[in-house]
Length: 204
Image (cartoon, rainbow, N blue to C red):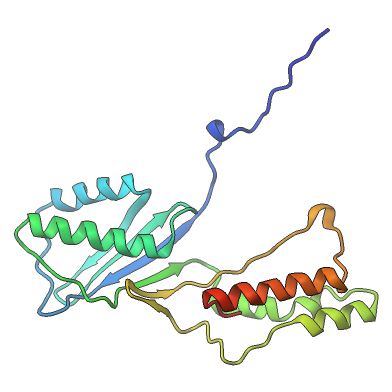
């Protein structure tokens, strides 16, 4: 009897769960922020941002600055969020007769329950927490650990589009939990990581 295998999980029937939150704050280049236009203004803007897969959750609108909280999908980069929020907001205000130019020093912050201090402490304790039975392997792990005092993750990264408080904690798991040796394998991974960081200006 012939059987047909069906995948339970396919891209079209999955609705992934994630909670990625970002804070966006913009200041005027000169003068003050115009008053918030009538009610449909933010409703229409929210619909446009939804098309960008950005969902407006909260906002605070004062004469000094505009602050907004968004949820976003994993594919959205902080730079895309910064420029798309600014671009649509400036365009909508211009159409409403309340043109504004935002300072280039926009601020974008990732928001979550895991604080930078918590993650840094977790990473710092990794070798001690999962101490391998072989002391030689532990010594090799420690030899590849990076403790760079010049990297201060509390400070923002700056580009032409804004300032970003956005750091990533990456965990790479090998297939089958294979224990990678620190001969050529480990040195290749460590060396490649440093090369990528140096080429792109990343701090580790």
